[in-house]
Image (cartoon, rainbow, N blue to C red; front, top):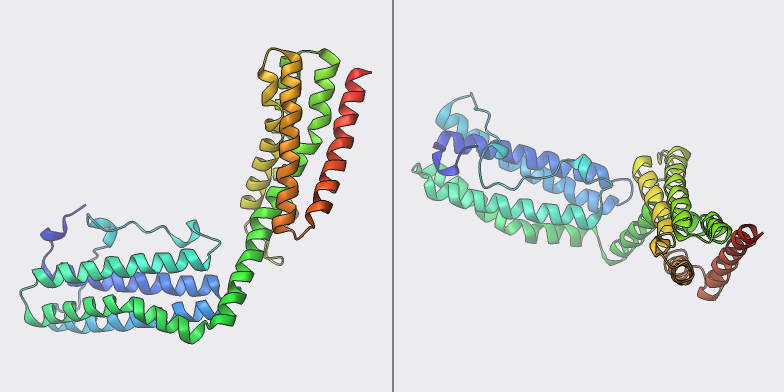
Amino acid sequence: MRNFDELSEKEIMALAIGNEEEDGRIYADFAEGLRADFPASAKVFSEMAVEEGEHRRRLLDLYREKFGEHIPLIRRQDIRGFVQHKPIWQIRPLSIEVTRSQAQLMEAETQRFYRLAAARSTDASIRKLLGDLAEIEAQHEMTADRLVAENVPTDIAAEERETQRRMFVLRVIQPGLAGLMDGSVSTLAPVFAAAFATAQSWDAFVVGLAASIGAGISMGFAEALSDNGSLTGRGAPWIRGGICGLMTTLGGIGHTLPFMLQNFWTATVVAIAVVIVELAIISWIRWKYMDTPPLSAAMQVGFGGALVFATGILIGAS
């Protein structure tokens, strides 16, 4: 990587042109990624992409006048001090908060770059253009606020927040809750059956560990293969599958870990306490995100958990 103070004016101008082109394409990608779910915010980023294109045109015109047609390839990742932006595919699914935060970071970085570049320039016309662009970037936050005010009024902003909440429920809460319920409830029977059949904590731990990991793998693949998200909007299948599989494993591991205690009855009592906490968490999530009445959620989850728990004890003690 090179230091910024090693660049010539020609290279600084080439870097500025490349930055404006890249920023414009990022804003266009933001707009495309938000268009289906947040059309008003997508329009904001489309207009910001157009502004970046106008900056690039002004830089190109002056560059041709000063240095000719050839533009050396200099990218921000080649220069020390620039923030390394994540590619769009690494921050999908896009959210309003993430895109606007990324845009603010980009504008602040570009403003600083233009001010430093203008301070180093000895050519009056280049210095003026870079200084003007620094001022424009400083005003971009207000421009973004204006575009948001024009395109995202209060009622649409509230609707977008609700849409984002629903997407979060579809893509994260639902697969996570399904996994947590399966891991917490379905592994109760084998864990406690093994515990009461052998009266050995370690045997129960081994069975619980195997059941939890196996259920996590099974649920993860089942969730990932059930829906590719193209029509339902539930997001990338491998992300949902990973969430579901991880939460399934965690749900089973929770009441398995107490059986690492050597004393069987102490381990059993602690495991039962953990089960109660797990069922309470599941009930809370169902009430908080799935609009299930709290009493109904507690009764449904508690009744199902009690049946599986009793089944495990009866089979293990028989």
